[in-house]
Length: 498
Image (cartoon, rainbow, N blue to C red; front, top):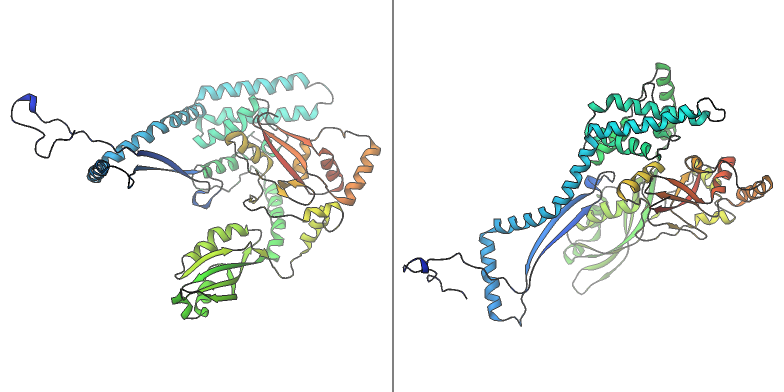
């Protein structure tokens, strides 16, 4: 029961003193908390997702609600308008309770990474594990490669032991998650680039991995890769870099695309003619040609117009990203121009077929045989191919550390489905030591491979236990290795255990 205004207290003693007012809540009321996740903060896909937390307090009434309900909502709205800090404090309290669990979990992980005793324990376990390998097999024949790998890992662990006390948090994170934990779990890939060491035992990729981690955490991107090299080695490396960049200096890869856009042009813009509008459209960065294919009058006085749009991109820049993130937002900012529909952009680069591309097409078997069906790729709406292609170790790390499936939807072709083309050299370390058939079988199937190309993908399993395994199509890797084929189609499966 509500007391009338001015009658909340009387001067008749303690029994009639005023009490704190009670607020009746509306019957149909809720407090909603929801999130908005940006997987490309500042346009950088390599960073950790940025999560915005929003909240909403809603009160609902309908024409059938009793008059008292309208009075309650009116009173609550007036109170909240005058006391915004009360609502904000309540919202912050609810959100803080939810985030508290994750903050504590995050802090535990940070404490574990920065804990010197736990780090030293992991170092001791790794040294014991790989030191035992050197002791057990050091004098035996046929284990030279195993001993060499164990020595490299032991050198890395020794370098960590000497330097971890002075490391920053990102350096500790990389040391623990990329090296020490896989070493202790016996999942460290001692045959891959990550195990290459400098003379003092420092991993050659350490600074590069730390730079990536700093970038993911929102810090300044670090692209520099450091080496301990002699003058002769530096000169040789620079010459290799110059040789790799020579094609880029000789030719700029500019690609032209065409699409159609249906739009309603307002009466005001339509009466001024389309030339001024087309000039404004051409001013959008990347747009090269704008033309009108057809137009018809609308009862409102405006026009329904279909525009032919051509735009240029450099190299293999994703065309759909340009359309969705640059072109369409720019068009929507134009006054009197309302987009109704748009088509998929198709490439129309004049004379497109350079020598390097021609060789690649022949290697993949395009243009004939079953292998030619790889060229019959169909675009699946909503499926985007991450570019540039990450290395296999990065795909595994994303899956192990964050459950991220970089390639979660395969590309469809006429005769096969696969996720990505991968270098055969990157797949070779995961093949068995011996071909599963005899020499006659190898020669017969190899001839078919040369004739038709890869008619099925290599099936590759990535496990959350840090292991990688080829589960099918291993023969293709053998054939690619023998023939010199650079890349193979790969179908990825993400599993808990491999």
